[in-house]
Image 1 (tube, rainbow, N blue to C red):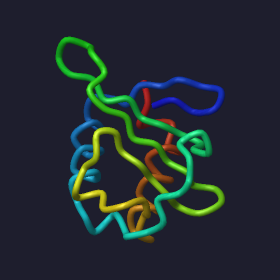
Image 2 (image 1 turned 180 degrees about the horizontal axis):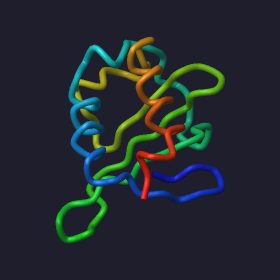
Image 3 (image 1 turned 120 degrees about the vertical axis):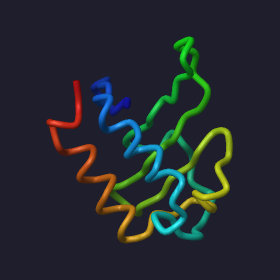
Image 4 (image 1 turned 90 degrees about the vertical axis):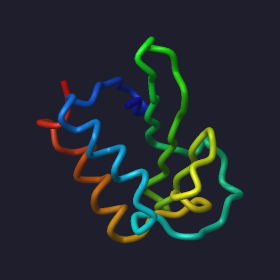
Length: 100
């Protein structure tokens, strides 16, 4: 995960939880898609087994809970986080025990 001033790596036991989060459409809402990824406070880089970047997920959490995935992930809908998804991602990011 990359924040404005930091780069961290999720612990292995959290990676599957994050993937499950991304694949659960209940964590996302339909929302506007006009915000720019340069407005995001955090982004996650997704790597394959060869350590090549295969995707990125951007999060804007302060102003309005928004997300964008590249490439597009249908379960993430178009741009919004549900209340459940927002609570979950905030806890993941802020819990220091989730990071190496």
